[in-house]
Image (cartoon, rainbow, N blue to C red):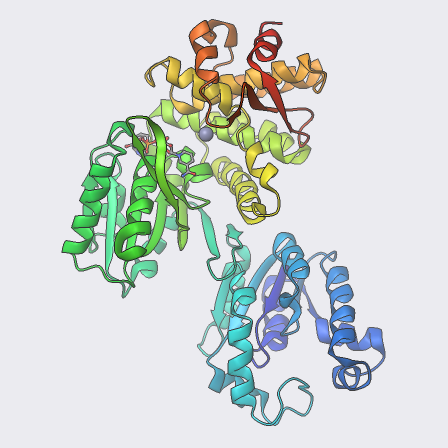
Length: 506
Ligand SMILES: NC(=O)c1ccc[n+]([C@@H]2O[C@H](COP(=O)([O-])OP(=O)(O)OC[C@H]3O[C@@H](n4cnc5c(N)ncnc54)[C@H](O)[C@@H]3O)[C@@H](O)[C@H]2O)c1
Ligand SMILES: [Zn+2]
């Protein structure tokens, strides 16, 4: 376990690192002390003799070294996380927490500040400015703790032990909380805000149990209701409830409720807050994270939409207890996909818990959801720089979508079609010499053990190939096909329909 405490000077990082380390049975580390030891002089002297630039270089190398140590609670420097590379490494190797306090409290604690080279003559003004400048960096954290309130050590311990995935997007960052019973955290998230809690007829019982006081709206269940008309119902209900710019729309349901509510939130008053309580496995591992929202049009699925990130996501695996069995099985296809994209460790872990997942074991679901969400979060974060990475999420989906369409969206539910799409992708991988047949067998065995369909030949038809050509991601007469190799070695290959057919019928 690694816990990093960040935040401005005066937030209490060093003291709380010692106290939290004692409570967690870990070793406290003080980054500034390490830097001073490495330099052989005090921080103030490093600044005076070598300048701020040299200090940051030294701080960076010491931070990278500490991130390789196990079982530590690290008090970072106030500016350590300003370096984007360091920040990314810290949040991916441990729990990164931001300690905060009102500037007045910070200034009082820092006092005269003889050893604080950045503060100057007016600490209050300097601290206020510093916190503002670093707001985006400090927002990329697994949790915040206000150290001017009692119980800071307990809060750190609780956050360190919690299962949470950070989606780091500057000031729009949010945390996906995963576990049994996390739905009970909803009231605290909506407290003091005008809220409309949206569900469908099958998920309303969860909403009513956790947020009985919130204004509520029930939608009819089903993909056929993922329309602009349904969005208009959400808009009108929210306006009727007096939702203001600080208000919040919360989706309690599967991907349909989430996409509809998110789109309503993106557009209402040009954007109000949005929170997700996903209740289907697909929504937990896929649709609730990433901020894609939207509706279907007669011309096709998801053709109108917007990016609108949620402010929180509460993935409570206990809600899966009422999910119809077929939906529960289908959602596992996305978990297989995510594991194969991630690499050997994730595939091995999924193989080890396949039977437990199949038996509906909730703890196995917590860890499988954690891994899938972690992958999605990384891809969402890196999207701007690594557009290819997001394309990889389409693994199993090009053929999957064609199967769904050819079956008029009745023969297969999405996850079943994706499972067959994964079978097809593996077959292509072998045909193209990118995957060994032992790996293909391994992937097929995993899919079958999770209760998903694998009989591709029975599902293929001319009609299916016809739909492949209508793929949104087509370029000319070629389709960008995501082809797996060994776990973690997936690539995108442009293929003509002929090449695709030959590969799949080989
Ligand atoms: N935004 C994204 O990034 C993204 C990604 C993937 C999929 N999607 C969208 O997600 C949708 C599919 O999501 P889905 O599979 O969750 O479908 P869904 O929302 O239709 O849910 C499936 C069925 O299960 C019911 N249900 C859900 N949770 C339940 C529970 N806990 N107990 C009892 N019944 C429950 C629903 O009422 C529905 O009947 C599609 O519209 C797809 O386009 C979006
Ligand atoms: Zn999918």
